[in-house]
Length: 173
Image 1: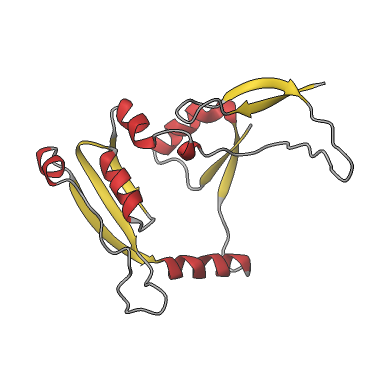
Image 2: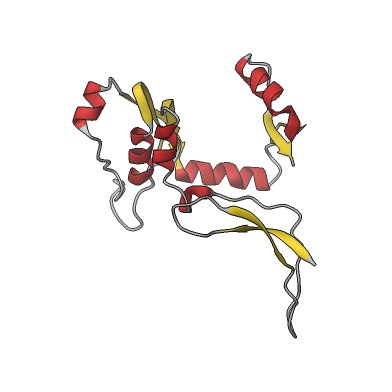
């Protein structure tokens, strides 16, 4: 019997969906059927190059205060793009309030010549986000979402662009 599998053939190549034999479990092993899973291609693809190949983005909103993530977001911008820094890095344990990853490196020429804007927005720290998760786990918040079929994705995009969506969208495969 065969199954479909996402197979990595090389680091710089997309995953390939192939039919492969269903493995036979050995003694003290179990075979688990996975109904659904998610893949993050950030480990198999140069995300900045992929975004730039599509023309770049107008706005990159970065809620993770990591210098590397901020630099990648900046590199993904097209001409006249805006980099929005949302949040602050957490202080280093046992140190002054100034975090160890408080500095990011941005290319001056590309920023100025391409008319890129860097904007800051203080919404909270990582500790604040952890508190939000604790409140949610305690049942004090509610995630508002709508479930849609995957074949409704184009209509859903139109609704989002027309500000007709009041919730997060979750697509069923």
